[in-house]
Amino acid sequence: MYIGLSYDGRITSTSATASRRVSGNVYLDSYGNLVVEAPGSAGRVSYYDSDYESCIEGKIRYIGDTLITYYDSDYESCIKGKVRCIGDTLITYFDSDSSYPGRVRYVGDTYMG
Picture 1 (spheres, one colour):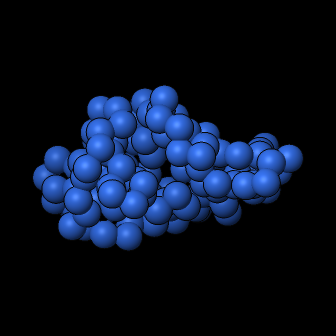
Picture 2 (cartoon, helix red, strand yellow):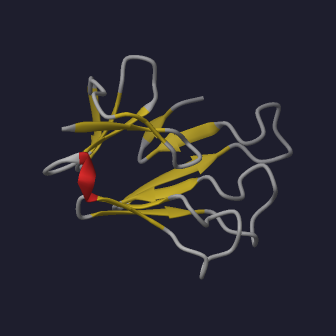
């Protein structure tokens, strides 16, 4: 199944359509949104608990066996709490010095600008 994932870690769809593979089980849909191929069903989604700082607490931790990580409070505010890695695929964002602060810049090696 394919799960649509927002850049702040929310599941936006459990019937997402993958159109372009980025790396491993990470895709983009036709609108450039993140899509993760998850083995099994959506019941295999787990979340970060209260042991994590507030910008990460309650967000998706695993989809199937794929670990999702986030930028924490050590990063500037426009990036804090956003998806950092889906498995081994790094997501980077424009910083506060650009005209697109917090907007996705790269998903893996794919430029999204």
